[in-house]
Amino acid sequence: MGLNVIMMGPPGAGKGTQAERLARERSLLKISTGDILRDTQHPIALAAKAKMDRGELVDDETMIAIVRDRLMRPDAERGVILDGFPRTVAQAEALDRILAERDNGPLIVVDVVVPEQELVRRLASRRICSSCGTNADPGGTAPACSRCGGVMVQRTDDNQEVVLERLKVYQHATKPVLEYYRGRPTFRVVNGAQAPDRVAHELDTLIDDAASVAVPLKTTSEGSL
Ligand code: AMP
Image (tube, rainbow, N blue to C red; front, side, top):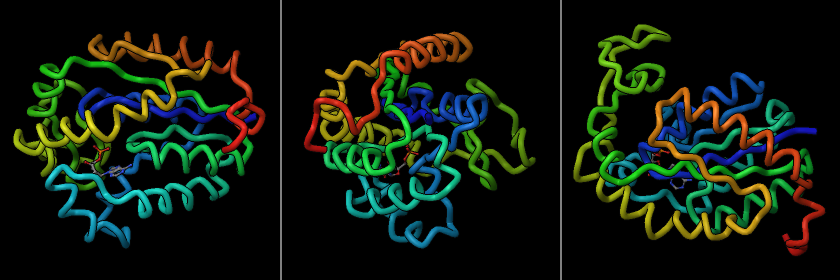
């Protein structure tokens, strides 16, 4: 039986770092929609760039098609860690339908909570690798990527004006997704303002706990998925 985890939370909450670790340690596929859109080889990258640079969302139809395609490939069979998807209620509804079709284990939703002031502070100093997209370690100032040696740069959408727009978009488009999931027995909240190791430890515990009460999506009482 697989396991599917959604990492929810605002930009800068540390979802990507934790998603990467979880995927590695649990041998699950990480799907980061932001990383997919930033991959200049991806056919949608060029069209998405203008929206991303303004801090706006790419349209639901495109995002759902990208995630559906990724989830249907064999390497997603054991389960996935989703980072950056779903960001709207329409995406969450579509994901429920896709996961019910795949029928490969429960869905656990984790909300990583961090105060807005701290998010703004983190995003202002965040650096990613210009070659492979890896995030610098939190607080890290190394000029070269620890994975591939590439140059560390600021993301074009991490400047202050765009950050404020992304936080606004998070409030009106993505916060409702938390309400969509909150009533489920597999919904969990973690304090993302703690040290990354502490967040990791708590995440592991709450994911194991949620998995123990989970039932596959197909058989939940939501019925009309
Ligand atoms: P992220 O790396 O998750 O912060 O995403 C960077 C940008 O990619 C976002 O600000 C959006 O412009 C776009 N994006 C990523 N995921 C989605 C999604 N699920 N729906 C719409 N736009 C997205």
